[in-house]
Image 1 (cartoon, one colour):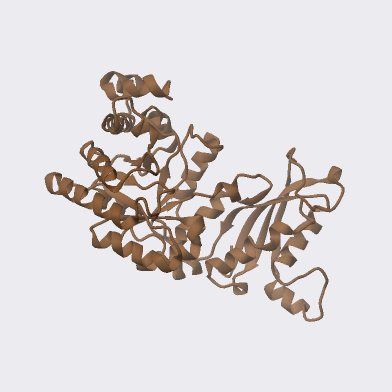
Image 2: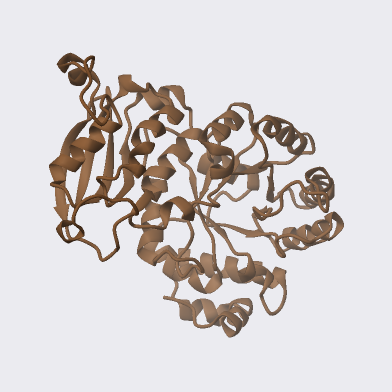
Length: 418
């Protein structure tokens, strides 16, 4: 790929000839419109038009065409399309890049389906966007977990706890040896438990724990809000000694994450909430591989990928590909931490570790910790014991023999996976 171009990869379906549909898309997203105009000269097209780099037909799926599609549905075909966009069209600007590679194209009636699945970006983007400030190593240092999987949890119930109840829960989790705790994305800055009250309830508990043990778990306070309030919310957390803030990437936008990243003094925990709205369909939207590159360049130190056997729609293969994508090098920027969540518990540790082959992951168990039959502390113990056993290369049978907390978790959550 030329340093002067971006290459976007799509999966498209159309009832028109594949090359014709690809050219319509390339023109609409660069120099063209529905008709050739006088000033769209050959020279302009040569310099600025998006170009079809490759077009490879693949088997058709059984989904119906998108609403408003033109052409005979019986003639529909499917293909992987790679389009090359001149960087000069938008420059190394993430919002303007997205206008080109994921703008009006979803509405083009010549396409019966279109999904952006990957992006190849030139070095100019890393020259403008610094990416994560902390990533894997910085996060490990701040939470005092130099090796092994980082074990974390989400506050449960997600909403409804008073600040005092939250402080009590955090004390229990810290004493149990958890590395990381986060607000649920549903817990923001509402009147029942406002951000300032939560900070004031949590941070003294964590600091007392640090005074006793020398280690302070990382707490990710949800500071998601209007962009104009992100700095103040961040500053509130940091002034109280906090070591992490959480922002919902799709709700503040990539530009909001980048704005926060330029100001932040602590890691940004990037939540993916609402991503299913643009990712779940095979016919339209943006795939995780493309989305995560923009989120990482914007500055997310941690990024949710889901985990195997999750409670949502993704298959294990899709989740493992997401984890792999976040771990792949990107333009030399600091590595982001994959965050495994959704239905996670100790019985998934051996299967997960065997599949991902690394401990450089943050594993979040909400119900898997808080729902443990012997309480949240035992839930943390079951997670730690399972992951440590997997990392030592032991069998699941050995782990179950040695950990009563893990055996009790199996009684409630069902058979562990190997």
